[in-house]
Length: 160
Figure 1 (cartoon, rainbow, N blue to C red):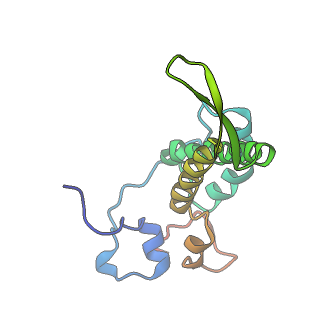
Figure 2: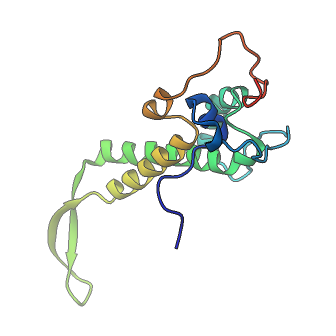
Figure 3: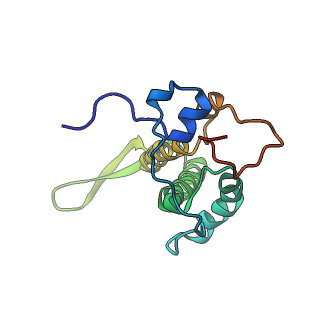
């Protein structure tokens, strides 16, 4: 049986939210300062999403070397969602599809939901799920309180 309740907040978010000190893990392992680079499996379109968003996340301390695979999955899902949306725009949400008999011969046509809808919905769910982990949705960002604008972004959030 898995853990119950909502997923625990990352320590830096718990500190920013002002959670009780006894609920903040001050001994959480921290990633070493390593190069944050996209994995080789990202295609060109997903790589351009990475290049647009990752530098800002890295500067804010949200994206570390440990998070690259999860963030790459988000970039990939963004691109798949865009592609599916483009197909739906061109083909429509409802399409005519052939109906075959048991011998494999076409016997007619039927109206059905475009299969790209499934791709869009799955990619959209992944974009939302992974995006929430990086604070990339408005509702996840709404609860964040970042320190003064002039503060050092590399300062330790737990010790100030």
